[in-house]
Amino acid sequence: MSARASGRRRVGPILKPVGDIRPLVGYGMALQAMASQLGIHNVFDDNGYKDMLLLTMFGLTKLGREGDDAVDARGRRYETKTVARVSSKGERKASLSITTEHTMTLANIARYRSSFLWIIAVFDQAQPEAVWEISPALLEPYFSEWELKLREQDAGGRPVRDHLNNPKIPLKFIAEHGTRVWPPEEAD
Image 1 (tube, rainbow, N blue to C red):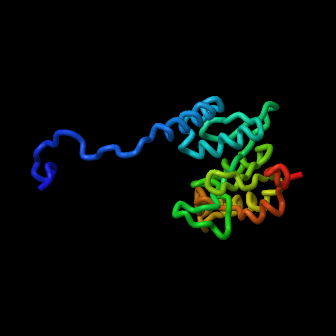
Image 2 (tube, one colour):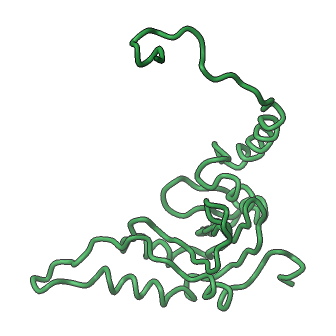
Image 3 (tube, helix red, strand yellow):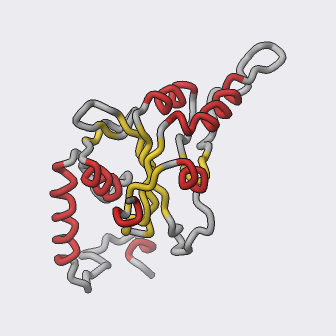
């Protein structure tokens, strides 16, 4: 019978470290030091590593958690979206799409329209595979469709919904209408 099951208090830990994590911690600390300079306070959470690469690549500054994602030296605001090529199960995805907002509202759409550019990056695990820029004007078909759904009213004139649940944009649309800017040799 275990100490927990018997109600007795254990003395000492159950788990014993068997691997040396110091080299991994060293790599993590080095990445975090670079990320901190860009305003990313936890490089391993909330897209920190991917954001660090995009901010560095384009000389952008990270904005707060709400609203636009980044700003350049001229004050132009950017929406950044990252797409994972490999699922959390380790399987390569056949088709990719850009996720937007968990709760897409009319205010989100207005903000999307007012951004200077969208930056869309596909990552194959830790490796950036491709990066595109696309103007909000080219994304207007999606914005208009979402706005129409959000403005839909019932017979009593009340909104049918107050938000959309994470509408997506197919990566194929971005590849066809956006401008590929990375990798450099393929973007030229």
